[in-house]
Amino acid sequence: MSENTDKKTVKVKLVKSPISTRASHRATVRGLGLRKLNSESVLEDTPAVRGMINKISYLVKVL
Image (cartoon, rainbow, N blue to C red; front, side):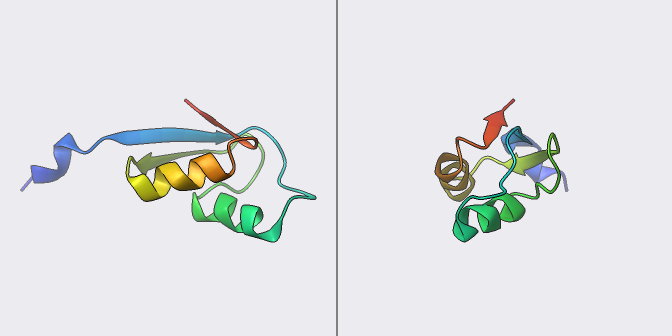
């Protein structure tokens, strides 16, 4: 039943405010599950998530 225990994860922290950024970048921040400044989210390490992190790399920090 626990076949998914070998999935890799990535932890992301919002370190800069998305105020006065592009609307698509704000949507990407929300898509990663980040709301307030210094909020953290643990996500599955997939190419889609890596692409989202790369798009807003100036706003987030990978822990």
